[in-house]
Length: 184
Image (cartoon, rainbow, N blue to C red; front, top):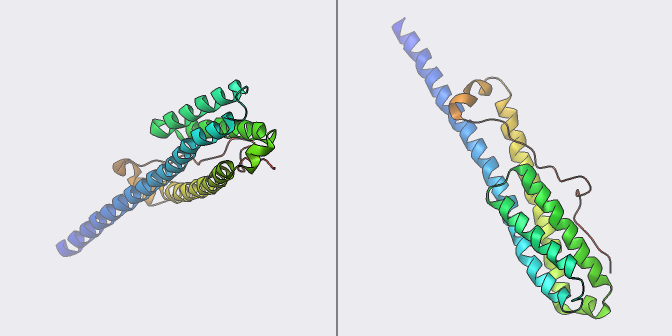
């Protein structure tokens, strides 16, 4: 009888360790996925000064547009460091709008649109937008898995011990579900 009790206790302890480790690994995966979004947002923010400099040479009188880009870029950098998912999303939306405004200014300059620098920067921005979209989806998949574990039996009994809770999904702000595009 004692052996049966010891076997049951050992099985429960082993299951508890397994549940703890599973929840922690899943939470870490969601944290890493959010970091992937930060990397891509930072990459995009780093491309913006090159785009602005290229456009600024043609449209130096559009000072307000370029100031907004600078502010939006700083907001993305701050949000990437230690912002919440909602703050990151809002900073991304502001930068998206700033990029649209810069590209709209560029439309008025045919020589700029034909510039190899401008075309290269535009292609890099487009590629980065695709990477941001993929990173967002990857994060949301990781959060869905984590939230599924945290809210179902038996895993929910171990969330307190593991220090794990549900996470917010990364929702693009309204009107920002697709990458900004400007046709030339």
